[in-house]
Amino acid sequence: MFQAEKFFNIQKSSLAHEFYYFEKLESTNSTAAILARKGCPEGTIVLANEQTKGRGRKGADWYSPPDTNLYFSLVLYPDISRLQYLPFAAGLAVVGALDQLGLQPELKWPNDILVRGKKISGIMMESSLESNSVQHVILGCGINVNVQDFTHELVPSATSIVVETGVLTSRESILASFLMEFETLYEKVKKISWDEFSLEIERRSSYIQGCPVRIALDGETWEGITAGLDSYGGLMLKTPSGKRVFYAGEVQSCRKN
Ligand code: BTN
Image (cartoon, rainbow, N blue to C red; front, top):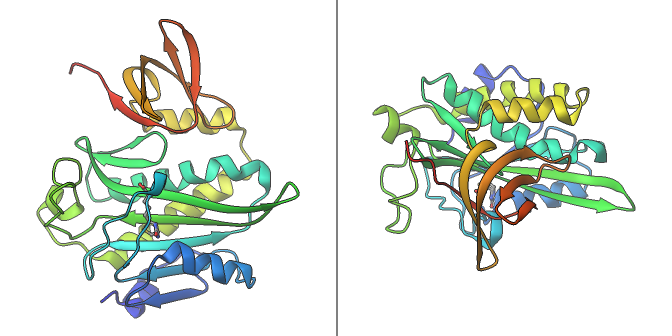
């Protein structure tokens, strides 16, 4: 069980003013969207100890066993001009929280967080827009904290904090660190230009600039050298047949070392 009281004793961010804890939910993103439609305050957190229909990007499931990991959603009401910053800000906040544990996390475009090349966390942003303004944004975040046994399909590609460090870590303290990191980044993204922010993203990702990669999308594969992010957060790729920009796709590094 996640200990909400312990979390509130250590958490210092001004987010999570409203905090909804559930032992079991289908998906924290779905519940958070219901609350957002009812007008819950910015910074509301929905957290579940277990998800029965945890959702990942591209229609994938998110492995959500009980008592081990973090599954939570954050409700925001940003200006539409900041929308594209937010999933990256959440990714950077996870990177910051994992840095504090001595891990060496990196962002993999668009929103995966890897340690030693394996996925330790994923971010999924869902937004509701109406006539060019944001009704709400739900930032859903899954962090593999204390899970040691992955499903057969995940074994080659997934990792967790306990697998990497050898010690069980408190989910309450990771969530508190994430929120501190995210709060700072959220204030920053309200002010800085996309160009400045994308440099910050590039600093935490070896994939985004000058990296030979293979990108798979809709059954096709492109190879080339990454050339940074465009002004919408798309990944630019120099290919033998010219420059392309990707807004979705599965990136695989082809670096030899
Ligand atoms: C991905 O990498 O595909 C994104 C995974 C996002 C998973 C989180 S867990 C909490 C929130 N609720 C969900 O159903 N999904 C997100």
